[in-house]
Image (cartoon, rainbow over all chains, first blue to last red; front, side, top):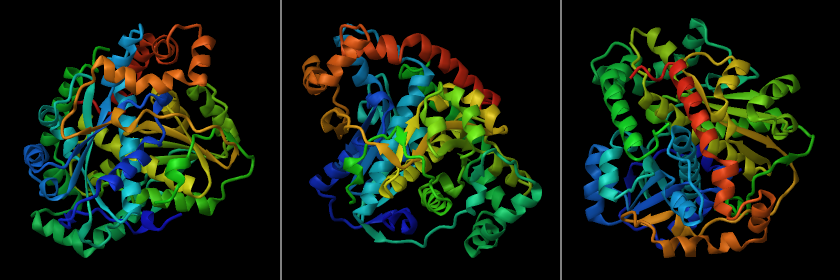
Length: 248
Length: 248
C-alpha cells in the first residue's frame, strides 16, 4: 500500500496557496465511493472557503488558527434531511427520528471524512481533525444553516503543508488490538504499554508545562477534564435532540 | 491518488485463503497512524479468526454469511477502558463516563476502521461493513468479553474477493456537498438528484421484490423501518449506559 499511511502526521500550518476546485472535487468524490449504510448516503459535507465564513466558524472551534488559516474547512455531518425529504416525496413515511439513525448517519459521515482525509494526504495535502465539531455543534449549525436532521460530527481543515511536525508516538499495536477475546489489562501490562510514551522528552515537558505530576493528569485535569466533558455531553445530547434524533 | 477509491465495491464473497498475519498487522498498523483525539487512542480492535468465535458472533449480525465465511472479522470499539486504567495507575481521576467521551471514542474507532479498510483495499483485499454492530452491541460485548468502557461501533469482514459485484450507484456529488451554507432541497432538486437512481433496473426490481410502490418505501417499510430503528435505538442507548458512558 502507499506509504502515506505510515508517514502521515496531522498538519496545522498551511501554505497560503489554494486547493484547486478540481482536486477538491476529486477527493470528495473518492469519499462518496466509500461504504454507506444501505447506500442511503445519510451524510453531508459543508465546504468552507470564504474568509468571512471561516471567521464566523472559528469561535465554534475555540479560535484554533487552522480554521481561518487553512484554505479549506470541511464540516462532515450526520444527515437524514435529504433522505427524509425524498421519502416524503415518494409516499414513504421515514422513521429516522431516533438515536440509532443518528449513529447510522454519524458512522456514514465519519467513513466519508476519513476516506477524504486519506485521499487528500495521498495527494500531498495535510489535514487536521478538530474535535470541537462535537463540542460546539450548536454554533456550527447556526453558522452553516443546518436544518433539522443534520448534526455536525467532525470538522477537518485541509491545505498544503507549510510546517511538517515530528511524527507523534503511538502505543504498541498490542495496546489496541485484541485477538479473539478482549484480554483486560493487568497493572504490569499498563506499565509496559505506556513506558516508552511516558519516557519521551515531549511527554516530560508537557507535564512540567502544565504543572502536573504525571502525564495522565495533564489529560484528566487539563486537556480533557471531567467538568468540560460533562458540559459538552449535555450540550451535544441537546443538539441531537433538537435536530430531531431523540424521539426514541 | 490510487484508483482503489474510485473502483472499490463492498465484497461479500471471499476466497477461502487466509489473510496472512503480517499483512493484517501492517493494515492494522496503518490504522494506528490515523488521527486520534489528543493522541489518546481511545479505541480497540478485536480480531476474530477462530471458526468457533465466528459462529458465536454470527447471530449478533443476523447470521449474515460474511461473518463465518470471511477469514477475518474485525470489531472496532469505542474504548476508554485502557486509558482509564492508565489514569488510575498514575494518580489521575478520569472523567470519561459521559456521552461526549463515548462520541470521542466512537469517532476514534471509526477513523481507524476506515483507514484499515482503505489500506486493505489497496492491497487487493475486499471489505464489508456490518451495521449490525450497533444493533446487537450487547451480544457482541458478551461474546468478545468487552469490559466497562468498551462499546462496539463497527464490524468489518475482510478477505480476498471471490465474487466482485457491479459497482453500486451513488447520488450526484451535489446531493452531499454544500458550499459555504447548507442550501436545503426544493422538491425539484430532490426529483433531479434521485431521477437516475430511481430509473435503474436494480431499483425497479427491488421495488417489485419487496411488493412496494416506490423505492423509498423499500427503505421506510422494509429495510430500515421505524419499529426496528426504535427498538435498536433503545437497546444501543442502554448498552452505552451499561458500559459506563451515560453518567452525564
